[in-house]
Length: 142
Image 1: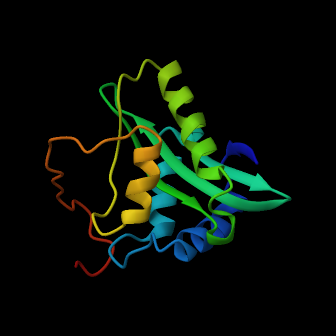
Image 2 (image 1 turned 90 degrees about the vertical axis):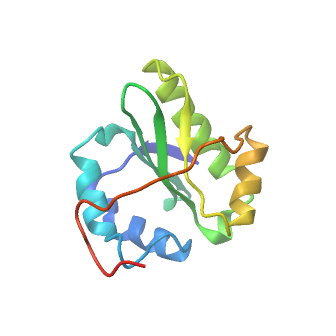
């Protein structure tokens, strides 16, 4: 798999990937999320290609205190081939090069397969509670 920065021509394929992986929600408009990311550290919005097909994506960022990963996705038929691991290794190296001391991410507690994936990569549950507040409403709230 070749990892490269997202380009606008990837939009439809990335949204389809997120939908195939069950990452989209009515209250998170994927097109708006893409547009927002392109305005902030767009070079950390990555896609992975294999055999000419987009098979992976991830949005990363660094705020000067912590790094974050969102929308890590691998095509369901390509999961287990090391693409997710490669994306995370690439992101970790990019954030480390920026001086990022810690990488955080959020996984829905019901997503046990993804939790196991991240544990294999050395991630552990922090003793913290994730809080959120919607500042811009994109759709119906849960």
